[in-house]
Amino acid sequence: MRLPSLLNISRFAALVVAFSAGAWAQLPDGPGKAETERICSQCHELARSISLRQDRAGWVATIDKMLGLGATASDAEIRLVTDYLSTHFPAEDVAKIQINKARAIELESGLNLKRSESAAIIEYRTKNGPFHSLDDLKKVPGIDFAKIAAKKDRLSFVDKP
Image (tube, rainbow, N blue to C red; front, side):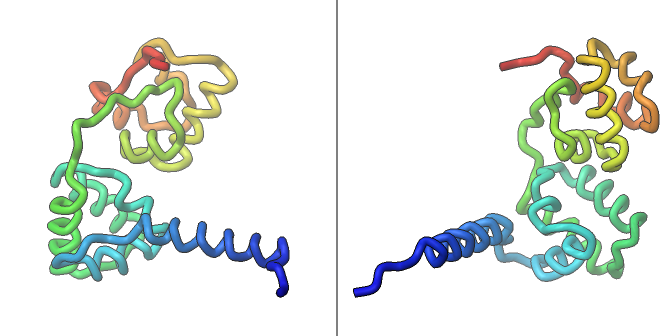
C-alpha cells in the first residue's frame, strides 16, 4: 500500500484553501446576482465588493464611484445591482473605525477613500505615531480631507483592545 507523499498532501491542502476562499465570496440567489457578479468583478475580487455592508445610499455612492472608475453597466443593470446589494448586504450597526489601528481596506470602505489615500494615512501614522483628533488628519499629504470630515462620526481616535 502506497502512502500519500508530503507533496501530494500539500497540493490537496492548497486546493482546499482555494476552494473554501472562493466559497466565502458566493452570493445568495436573487434578482441581480448575475449582474452583480459580472459588474463587481470587472476590477477586483468579488469578496471585496460584498464586504462593505451599506445602506442603499451607501451602495448607490459606491456604484457611482465604480462607474466613475471605469466599470460598465446599463441603467437597468445598475438598478438590479443596487437592489441586490441593498437587499443581501445591508448596513449593520456601523462600528467606529479605529483610525490608529484600521487596515487599508477598512479605511477605503468605511470612509470611501481611494487606495492611495488609505495608504497615505497608514504611512503617515506609521512614521508619526497615532492620530489624536480629526485635525491631525489634515497633516496627511495626498488625501481629500473633506471626504474624511464628512464621515467624522465614523471615526474613533481612542484605541480599544
